[in-house]
Amino acid sequence: MSTQTPQAIRGTQDIFGPDAEAFAFVVETFERVRKLYRFRRVEMPVFEKTAVFSRSLGETTDVVSKEMYSFEDRGGESLTLRPEFTAGIARAFITDGWQQYAPLKVATHGPLFRYERPQKGRYRQFHQIDAEVIGAAEPQADVELLVMADQLLKELCVSDGVTLQLNTLGDGASRDAWREALIAYFRAVKGDLSEDSQDRLERNPLRILDSKDPRDKVFTAEAPKIDDFLSDEAQDFFAKVTGGLDAAGVSWTRAPALVRGLDYYRHTAFEFVTDRLGAQGTVLGGGRYDGLMEALGGSPTPAVGWAAGIERLAMLVGERPAASLTVAVVVEDDSIMLKGLEIVSHLRRNGYVAELVASGSPRKRRDKAVKLDPECIVSLHPRYVERGFQISTSGGDDVSRNVDQLVAAVAK
Image 1 (cartoon, helix red, strand yellow):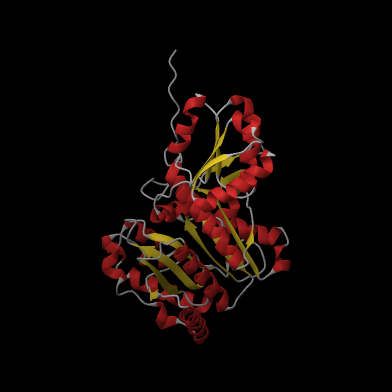
Image 2 (image 1 turned 30 degrees about the horizontal axis):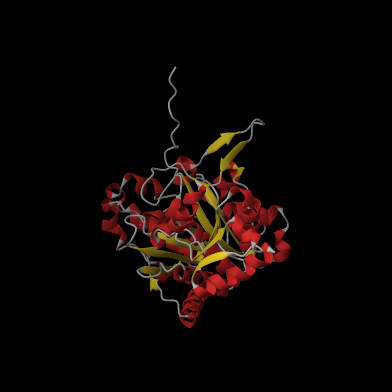
């Protein structure tokens, strides 16, 4: 009976070689930058109760209705693989007593899951980096997150051609007034809208504004603008955010059509976008979600955060080589294999990228080492043992001199 070779699940990927190095570079840079801003590292469960996401994302959103990987466990409870980080972090803030640390700055990264059509930069299992500030109502929290994101993109060397698009959704009263005006405006042309927008009209009219359907774009340009409904407090909040970005030297552009459909979003909404990834142009996005904790049954708690796709950032980073080899230790005779292991271990503990070449024909091992293109080669042979284990090195003078000293300490 023939057996079929198992294939990777559609929408997943095996990451290897230079692509994996680019992925790791994104994560390592994020970890370094988040420490500069004193964001605490958190690790979150890969799955939560389905209600955590249905209540936070809204029962009628495409993510909840079409894209979540939900299943019933053996106890009969509905669980869901996390489609995003924010809801789980908000749940932990409520249930784990994190309120005592507010304002709390946290960061994490890892895999997320959405059942959607795979395309360039979009997978069914994908990975994100995520940063959140919980319990801070001041616009300075928004500024800090945006400056942090801007620095991250610069340190990844992907900021060229990336634009920060910024908008305000106003406070609760501003947003409600804007929402009613949008409903009245789109009702008048309902029959000419796309089917999705007709369905969203009464429940979520803000989503119509970012529709890509040509039938909707005819009307969105003339739709009511949030600026006509902003309270004095909302205008002041946005002015402090933009003023803070200007002071920090972060460039931005106003994007009036940039919205967040869920009712718990307030004030700042933002995306870092590029034209280098085709249709999937957003590389990092987020906003202020002051109403989320209440939606999950917690006390009113202001919060703001962002997330970025690691795969998309890695695509912008481009292929990266593996760490270059500093020292190749060649064991020219198997009788001194243990000494070779001792030396290569000592070099690694002292910060050198080292490789042991001790397999295959002893006569060809040095040739194998040369092909690895190290900065320095250490050759070990029994005849050196007879002379007090002197070591033959070749390579750059500085590297060879330092390696000589380290190897000599072990060789004695």
